[in-house]
Every structure is written in structure tokens, then in C-alpha cells.
Length: 231
Image 1 (cartoon, one colour):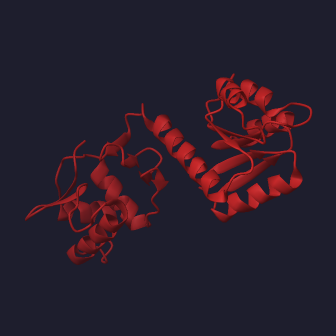
Image 2 (image 1 turned 180 degrees about the vertical axis):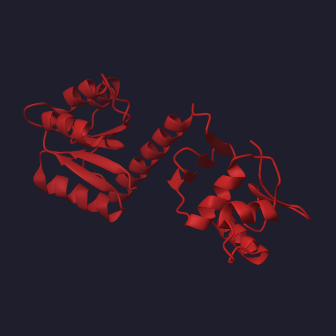
Image 3 (image 1 turned 90 degrees about the horizontal axis):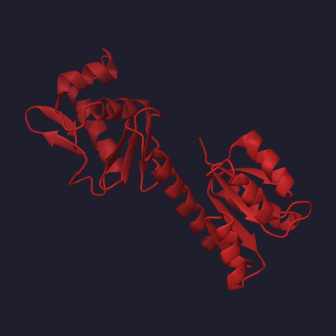
């Protein structure tokens, strides 16, 4: 599922420009035109990130952020034509996570969006016992949600790759024989051969290893099988 971003901006041209930029990066975007609309859209859509302008009619962005913080820890990036230090401090004090003064470059905005989303994912997963963190948290394997994150980015796996990785993730640090993996992953399908198992191990390494030629996470135990590195 794409990450969902709520864009709150009363200026239509600016709002649509942000929507096009974010949708071009494969985010799902919800729009709101002021603070009151933002609160309603947040309750309806539960976004992963809020981009909030400050100067808006009915309810400004600062008040909307203050109210959001009464019940939500969603990451918030504030936007404003104001650029003095006191405005920035006030925005952060009411609960914003980051502040960006207009005008800004597209690359800077996207970099801040990605950083806030990565931090949010790591914080959300930090206390869950069913989440494996390898490489100091660089590789995250969420066994409950069946998701894999590398450097905060979702790793897209095929069904066979997913079954193989999550089978190994059931017991990190324990060696699985080739027969055990073939039975668990292919479930009697004749395409489940030792050669195909080696091939899918290679595919997985290309997706999750910093250097597939020198694997750190998905290890071969010669003459026995494979294992996922222990925590």
C-alpha cells in the first residue's frame, strides 16, 4: 500500500502543485483547504504524514496542529512564507516535526517527507516484539504485517520470496535445511527444486543485502541449508 499524505493548503495552485509532485512519487494524497477541513480529513483517512500550511482561513495551521497533537502522533511538516526564527520555533513548539519556508525546492520537500516517514515507521515498530531489526535497524522484517523495510523503504517481494523470507524469519539464527524450506515454501509444488531454492535465495539477497556477494543477513550454511542472521 502506498503511504498516504494529507496536504493542507488554502492556495489552490500551491495545493495542486504539491499533489502532483507527491503523486508523481507514488504517494496517495488527500487534500484539505484549511485547518477544520484537515481535522475532518484526518479522521476520515488516517494519513501517514501531514503537510500543513500556516496561514489559512477559518482555522490556521498552528491551531490545527495543536488539536491534532491532542490525539495523534502523526508526523507533521509545516509550510509557511514566514521564515523568521520565532515563527519556526512556535510551529515546532505546538507539535510540528519539521518546518519548511516558502519558496522551497521540490527535492528539499521530498527529502524531508521521506525522512519524516522513515522516522515514523521506525518509531511505530520500535516496541513490537514480532518485528526483527537487523543491521542496526537498517533491515526491518515485520512478521505480523508481512512487510520488509530496507533503509526505511518498503521492499517489494514476490509471493515465493515473501514465503521464503518469512519462513526463515520465524526462527532467526536457526538453520533451515533445503528440504524444510522446499516443503514450507513450495508445499509440494514440483517447481520446488534445490536449484529454484538457490535462485530465490539469490533474488532475495539482491533485494535486502547491501552486498549480495557478501551477505550479512541471509546466510548459507554449507552442506546444511540457509539461515537468517540472529539479532
